[in-house]
Image 1 (cartoon, rainbow, N blue to C red):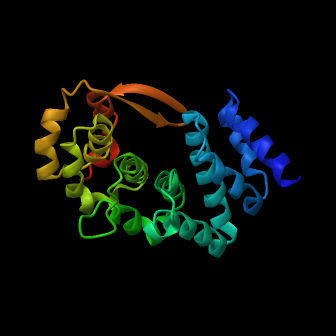
Image 2 (cartoon, helix red, strand yellow):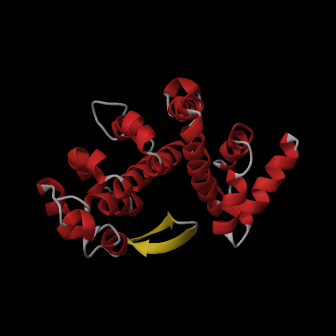
Image 3 (cartoon, helix red, strand yellow):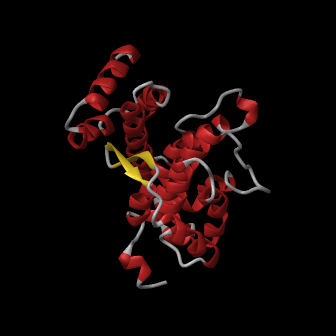
Length: 228
């Protein structure tokens, strides 16, 4: 299948109502061939297409890592480059994809989780672009819900976003902070429990409008909370 034909086919699958079934078809394509079309859809004007491309990238790259770890690392390094000021771009979709991949693949998570987290560190690779910050927080949250032990020690870094005037940043920070028993975030969470400002939240192939308080309630992971 040629590049243009493959891109059209991937777009069709990302647009389909039965995304859970179609993502299996996407993962059946050659990983090296389908990565570029998926990258291109990170910039699609349709939010659902963009987010489903992130999910599909997670499946494709985690599967690739199972049999060709170095090729998977090349893709991860591409995300990191896209988020570098020297790249000349903004890096839409890259932090979300990093989080999705690491949520699905343990070894990649061990290698790259600190880099993703560094994007919210004031003394690290802090990203100032507020819209891109949403993607970073979503990626960290996706990773935290799958592998909380990799994020736990950095929960305090969420405080800055929990006091943001942007409800998307507050909600996404609360979604992750609610997983952890952190003194500094717990104090702020008390205020966000009643925060009715809304944001658009993506998970598992769908978009929904939620309040900050509703998203915070989604953060609790009883299995993990019992052991903390």
